[in-house]
Length: 266
Length: 137
Image 1: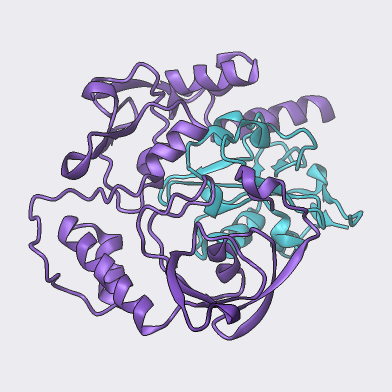
Image 2: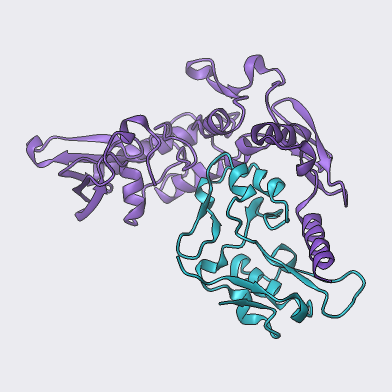
C-alpha cells in the first residue's frame, strides 16, 4: 500500500529504515506514518478520527505517542501517530505515563463534550474514566468533530458537507444549513461516523439526511429498496453507464443470473 | 498466481443449500443462509439438474471495483479473488448496486457489503457440497 500524501509519494519505495517502537526493532518505509506501522506490528493505539479510506487528519488527538532519538540528549516530544512519518533511528513509546496522561485528558474532554457517544464512553471506560472532571455538556450531541464524514464526502463522494463556524460553534453542516443540491443520500457520512452522530431516516421508500428527502428506488423486479435516485444518477455519470443498471436489488440480480445461465445451458 | 479456479457444475446441483449454510457459518458465524455469499438459484419450474449456483466470478474488469469510490475492493494476487477491505469501506453500497450478477450482497443487519473472497484460498462451501457441484481445483 502506498501513502496518499504527496510528500510520501516522492519517497522511494525500496528505501527501508529501522526504528524502535515499544522496545521492538522494526523496519518501515521512510515516511510511513507511525500509526499504520504500530497497527501492523500489533501495537494498539486508540483512535476515533482514523479511517483508512481517507487521509489522516489528526483531529481526535487520541493517538498521541512519545518520540525521541538517541541524539536528542533525552529530549522527547508528544506527536500524533497518525500524522508523524517514520524516521531512521526514531524511538517511539506508546505507553509511557506522559502518553497515558495526555490520552486520559483528551478522553475527559471528549466525554464532557459528547457524554452519550458510545465509542467515547467505551474508550473512556477502558482508561478508567466514568465521570469527566470537566463540566459535562448534557445537551452535547455525539459529534466529536473528528472530520471523518467531511473527509469521506469531500474526497470520495460529492462534497455536500463541511465544517462550518469556528470555536465552540464549529459543527458539520451543509452550506447555510440548507438542503444540499449535491448530496446523493448515500449515507456514507452517517455509516462511517464513529459515534453515530449523524441522524438519518430510512424506511425503504424515503431517505432523509441533512434536511433533504430522497426517493429510494424500488427494485424494478421485486420492489425491494435499492439506492437513491440521486446516487444511481451520480454513479451512472461517474462511470458513463445508464442509471437503470442500478435499479435492481442484489437478490433479483441473482435470479436474473440464474435465468440467464439456464437459457444459455439448456 | 495459483491456477486454481472455482468450478461450478449446475447439472450436479440439487439446491440442498449446504454451501449457503457453510458460507453463512464461516463468514457470519450464524446459520443465516439468505445472507450467504453463494446462492443456489433453484429452478422455478423445479426441473431436476437445472439449478444454478451463483457465486462471485471474480471478474477481471470488476464492476464492484470500478464503482467503489474508496478503493476498498482489492485483488488477492495469490488466489485471484477480489476481497473487501472492511477498514477502508465507507458503506455507500455502490458496489452492491453495481454488480450485474448480484454477487455483491448487502448485509442488512450489519449494514455492510459482503462478497465471496474464496475464503483466502480454501473455499468452505466446496468442502460441504455432497454432490461435487462446486469444486475448487
